[in-house]
Image (tube, rainbow, N blue to C red; front, top):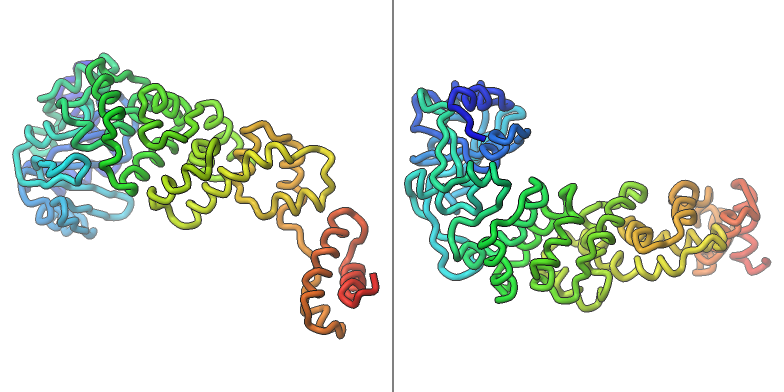
Length: 409
């Protein structure tokens, strides 16, 4: 897939927002397009991320570009990076750097370096290429690690033997790229991945970093295939030995999410946790998901299998409503993936979800019913009768609920 510089120059200019960006970088220290944008550009695929590297102060460069584009720059001092935003254009700018890992799994310590060293410290060869953006360098490809050859061969290859030890999140990323691009792990890279997984490298990484990579993987269109590879490589077991890395179940949860309104990624995570939900609860907590997401995943993982066995066509509407109303959409998606009868679920979603009375407790108080727990029980029973077609209309609801609350029915 050799690509001449003139062709790359045209491709670079075709990127959304690039024409105005190229004008804005004139006269500044040389900048380079790097990472996934280069990989996708060479593949002829659409890229949405514009990541740039400069062999100078990234923050100062970002401020100048933002001023020229009448946008704003946000600095990230920890890694010497900055983000420029103007309209719909978002550009991330990083100082060319080398990295040093104080210990396996730790965030790297960084210091300034040249472009070649910056490319050498990246995750995979196909992500370790750069294209010049300045002056006569526009469209010139830098490929010190052989990324173009691996792109042609369809290979995911790490740049050095300690790559997965230094940053074990690359285990998940390797599988994500392999399945997204339809590539294969290069032979030595696969061996290193298996060794790192078996040696417990993942245990050195914070839960939040694992969460980011795992959820990115589960949002991919090819997530089921990726889960299968996690199992084959021993990575799923390294994450937690009780995870259920079943590609078919994950695919079913993703498919059912479209019908139930569930988050596909959360439903897929629930599927992974559904074999032994009590045993993986601590693992889910370590991922530091937002509280609502964590609750949905754990509830779905524990209730999905129960619902799959409980749901059947003989349930009355009130029983179906009572059974499914407390459950998050992810539990319904997982139940369907596990073989639950689809009819009752679809009936609930189309006819019963959100069903409510036209009256409230205030209406009963206004009718002279004393305030007591009997009001709540009366409303629940009235809703049950309404759902089962035993009464209809506001007047009938009020009459029935009043009689129930007063103990007359």
